[in-house]
Image 1: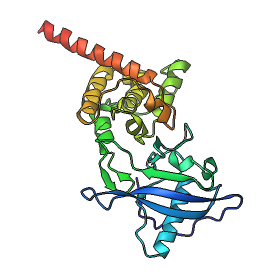
Image 2: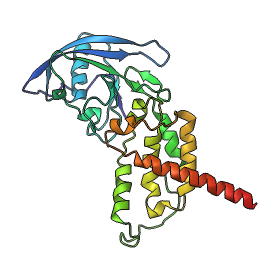
Image 3: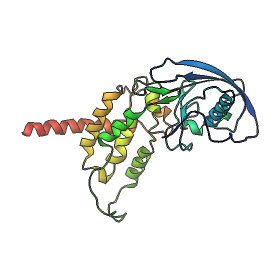
Image 4: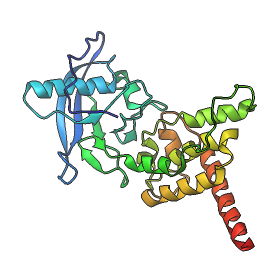
Length: 272
């Protein structure tokens, strides 16, 4: 994932239509160990057709023109796929429009004269790198623990050799839509990552190819998750904040598989 310090490589695209005059309150922190604070910026002339990230590009162009330090924020695809653009907007992960990543949020959702507070993800597992940029490598550690199928399958088999019921395929596909942005963690009062982990577990555990490692995968990923994140108490904030609307049902499935994994381990230990 890439991040920007505001040097966008060109002028912000020209937009037409209604314009907004905004006051931005942005968290500025020059480094991980430095103190941070909210800084106010007046930003007039924002087109309602701009995306939220284009609005930040506009701010940074004006800051650079004044020889001031631009705001650091992460972005990559700007198409709601990569998951790198997450930030808290007026206290909501990814902003006021549900089912939308920050890069897909447009300024028409705001009104002229609005005060917009912009902060990085607030979670102990996501330490701040600079301004709105956080370190989300704890999510990578969970995937490394078991978010894969390790069998050597050889050449790709004929697609119809392994039949997969459509409801199962649909559920696996919905879980695989997780973009790993971390909004679920940032929105959770406990800083829990159960929805992320459950999505990464479910899209493998639901399919025939994932059955051989189903329980060992679940056990390994859940226990790695608990090293970094808080516990789930089913507030449901994660599902509401998720830009891909990943269902809480995946957490139920993951918890069930985790209990089965522990039961199997105890039963095997009793046979020795």
